[in-house]
Image (cartoon, rainbow, N blue to C red; front, side):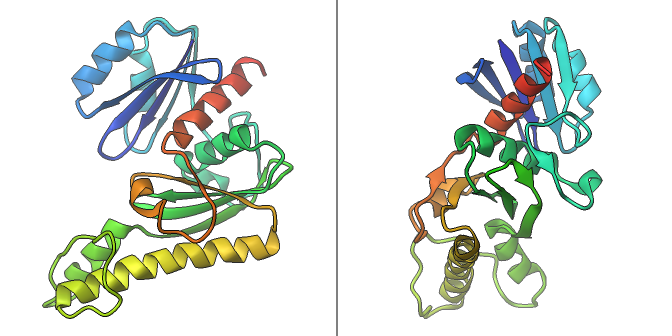
Length: 239
């Protein structure tokens, strides 16, 4: 049994895998509840990825695991990192491309993580990961328009905004939502020109917002990072 921990900015996702099969998933916002769960989890192997929490401390809460691993770029991985500055590479980006090769082995794949930022990560059919791109996420764009202007209001995304807004709020919704959709479609098209048999995976907190709005055929996988962490764990346990 494998225990996978993905600690983000606002919550921590924990999953249990039986080899490659996801059997449980929990989301924690309380450190005390997380500690209680981890101390009682019956897992043989454990891996943690965190953007801000102490990974050693979190692994110390996992009482029953024999093998405990922190995700780092130096760790043996099922992909070959070709990124020029791997020490600056986000751990979630590493995990997502590892999840991609488990879902679509031997296939050129673009992972789009639509979260706080929108990240684009490409892994080729030979498991080489050269990098991708980063742009502001949907909420960040709405906040930026309000924060960096004197009079524009803070508004929220609308599922299907009008092309021509007739109020300031509608204009912001049109510009940001439709502009972000066009960005996603444009980036996918650029990759498809270069890699005609490209598979596209969409994950992240805004997956449900975008999955039915894109022109290209995509595979929506909200649990991709968890799958990738488990893939890395399996790779190291048998390494």
